[in-house]
Image (cartoon, rainbow, N blue to C red):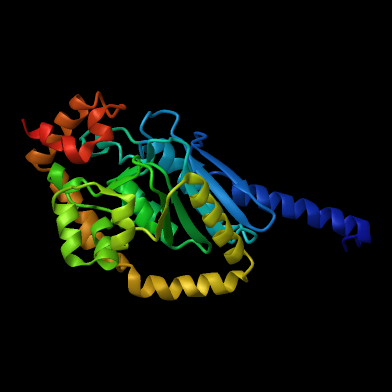
Length: 316
């Protein structure tokens, strides 16, 4: 018969088990690159700053995706104290520029799996954004730079979007100009936010939209004259939401997602699988090569900064 533990012994054992469980649960599944900085207030508001130190344009590459996947898994499985997550950028010109175009080339060596282990019919980037919509926290994008392609789809995956009226805020779904489609569902989300006609106008033409127009159309919740006003409002909103019980946030989010988000099957069939098929055709391959050459492999320059007005250079 095993000896009985003293009260102190039981406390020590429980503490050891809790620490071990916490260590196991929080262990990163994917490589960690330090692309995210997080800070959480005692009230339960986490701020996540995305800063891709491998890229001058905050590229949504494997480094950022890997760190986001680890964070999302942590928030999904373990974190009961965080009620609200604020996503912002450490790059003043780009919230997230777009996906790494090299992703579409045969032979690209990705340190991440092509399909997400937890959602095996979804590619890793698509599953990543889907999982953001599923977070048990309220999520808010704080926008002070460009977000195109999957960068804008990242914004769509957040529950709310607020921006400054900075000229650096330019949003777009640029995939059609490459002979592709918004593969993570950007056009699907937009059509529910701004309507069918405006979605066709902006996505077909790969046009940039500024913050003031985006606010007027409903692409974002609200635009603020200054960065200070933006941050003051978002912090007040986040603190208010963080007062409320976690169950109410989860339940409300479930209901809104049910009517405002495409189903997983539709997203896979009519967005993700379409871009996978198109990426294997000659036109996107040639245009992607032109793009990489013109941008010096996605470096800061006129084409990245002003894609909406400069994209015709790819066809000359």
